[in-house]
Amino acid sequence: MPFSEDTLDFLALNRVMNSREWFREHRAEYEKLVVEPLAELVEDLAPAMAEIDPAIVCLPRVGKSISRIWRDTRRGRELPIYRDVMWITLLREKYAGLPSYWFEFSPRALRWGCGWYQTPPEVMGAARELILSGDQHWLRAREAAGNRRFVLENELYKRTRHPYSPAEERMWLDQKSLCLTHNEEGISLLYSPELAERVAEDFRAVAPVYDFFMRAWERAPKETMRR
Image (cartoon, rainbow, N blue to C red; front, side, top):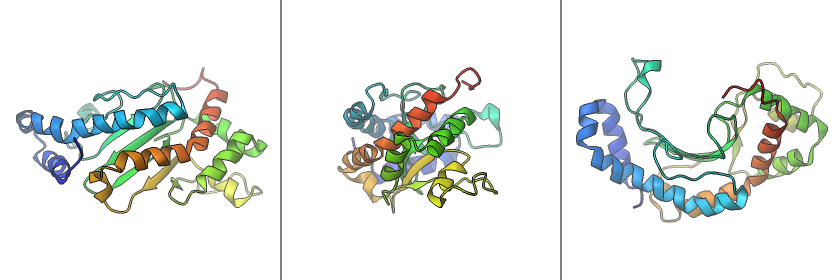
């Protein structure tokens, strides 16, 4: 089943209602309008993921590749119970500090990309070493990242730690975390039958960036990395 305007309407209303009772009464709508389209997208993207990395896991279930709509309110009881943002995460293993491919939508935005929400410091250190050494994985990633459809999430240290490196390298070296993102203009593609094909095409295009991220992860010391 494809996404529709009803999908976004449900997410927005569910967040406004902010009621477990209301959600239980409308659980069937959630499954039909939100979970089923996300599961279908995971299945449609699975062949492209297998080309990029056969070890990437694509499980079209909530709590696996599909995000949960409810929050863990133990971390902030003042927050709404439910999100109006949903996403899928495609990676080898959860809680291991690995990079992922991801897709996210809400009533306000549609975007997808590759990287980390928060890169482990050990991996950032390894990535910087690869960049400074001119590693071939980095060089291929830099070329692929030049695709104008993607931008590097811009969370930089206030003062550069690499003043003598070329500007293009500093943009990566000074990042606190690494994530390459495409921000779609408008929401209309969410309803298109071409959505999965378009996302898969973009995921393939930045596969060298994923390879660079994996290379950094492989070189990072695991004994100090949080799981």
